[in-house]
Image (cartoon, rainbow, N blue to C red; front, side, top):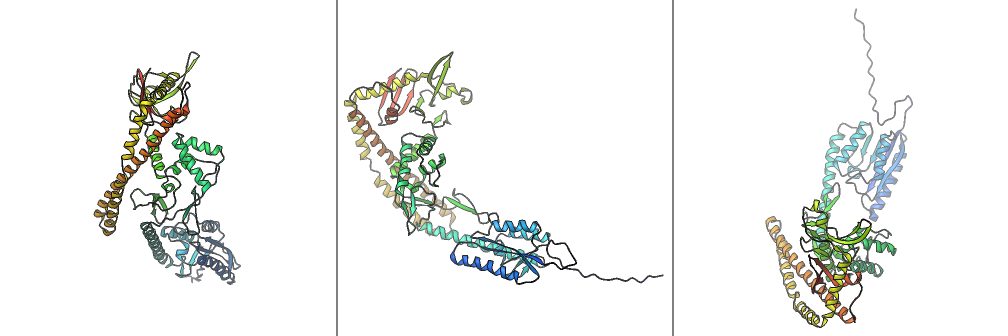
Length: 523
């Protein structure tokens, strides 16, 4: 017996969203996402128009219920990490508060193909639709995935093309020497109505103070503490300073009126990650772009001093520069060349202060068996005192020597050499522009320009050191003239003023003065 089968087809009901089926019809919970990428006035109005449009559009549909208008104002779309409203919307969708999302176009949702597909697929898995008005794509449709992938890729390509155009614009501006600098946290400068850098006198005093204290022998840490003690605000108008702030101020070429452009480079359009430009892209050095706070020769001397302190060696190993005591980092071993360190001794209750060669102190780690003797601090100070007094007693012999040194420095003309180098560099710049895309020629010309710039820098540094030597000799003159009798007490101030270096041997100490003179003292 064959039983008759009664088959009834139950039509599929298209479900949208995360709501559970009920007998009573439910309204679709709809949200909208709006975004403009910049802060220009015309796009500000576009932002308001988008919000107003979606509010009225959703409320006008009786089957829809408005959840919220999620809007990001003035934020780029290449990455979703910084879009607060977007991330909040995705979070609400995952929490089951949204059934459908409306947005103007794929480029408004995201210009990053990976992000766009990632979020729309996550939402699709939750049965949440995203509708792109411009492209007329609903991600829950069968054709939506394919169309969206194509359109998102085109949107990303558009973004990358736009970024490339922006980079070309910046590069062209750099080639013209047009300097654009963020001055918001730039201590010493602000901008006038035309966008040019102008000096802020009160802040410029702080910058000059930092340079002066560094050249007086203070470390980054000491300068930091000095500024904080006097309650001086940094460029961000904070009371707390950092050693990195001091270093940045002391090495920033903008304080001499120059500007090195494109120090950093955007490596990835999507991530917008900026990295140090170590040859990835060309740099542009603009001389005299704005008014200087620091003299060029002072700046160059500071760079040389930073390098000297960073390269204090002992047996080829770097030592940390210290300026706590006047003799710190200027006392060297005559045997191995390492620095001497100040050490407190306590031998069976007998306390004393001595100076010892660091290689000998750290014999196990340095691997150097240095025979340098330990010298008591009072003996070292006495030797310094003797050297200073010997110089004072022989001033009639010394003054003519100093005059001769000054004359040699004055007669050394570097201006002519610098002018010739500038002409060569300009000629190579013209050839560089004519090279087009010939990478081999570009590299060859680039190497020549870098070599000539280094030669120019070396000449300028030497000229700055000559000026410094003149100042040091003049300071020695002043000391010899103002001193009426031999000095009886050791002084840290006098050491910082007059002495460049001290070398300790077994039976003698060689004291080198900043003026270039030397004095040997037996110990």
